Length: 191
Image (cartoon, rainbow, N blue to C red):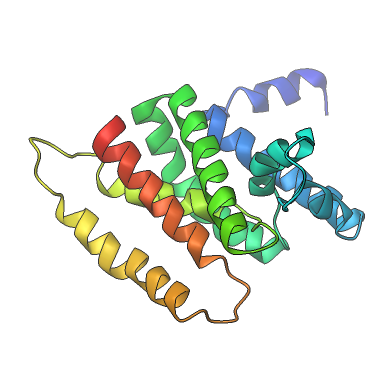
């Protein structure tokens, strides 16, 4: 295959959602390296209680959102992020989308650390943020969108129940709840 043919193929694709696609690719790279290193990368990047003088304590508040337990965990998060993320990035802009992802990841890491010794990993807090944010994307004149109520009833309330009854399923339901709250705050009060 000639270089010209490769360039012709590349012209058919658009990097249409810079933040969401970059987030996907970074998390995929972290998953691959973590798999090769047999969990050492996730162990290094995951939030944990530690000295406030250690700069990694603060960096891990964000990097824990790049880690995933396995392919299934990664796939489950990114199917939804790739579905709704580009729409949100188009509506709010790339910089705002990046800020929302980082703020949500830090908030859920802090809440999880308050409850547990070690932080949660994954992007599911951002999944919940984006789903709730999508449900109120067309908010107008102070009216509550029915989609927000339905998302809360069918998506968020289940996480609250699971968190209250502390099922031992190795899922950070508190992070999902924090993500949903962040999505509501971003959609209703900030943007």
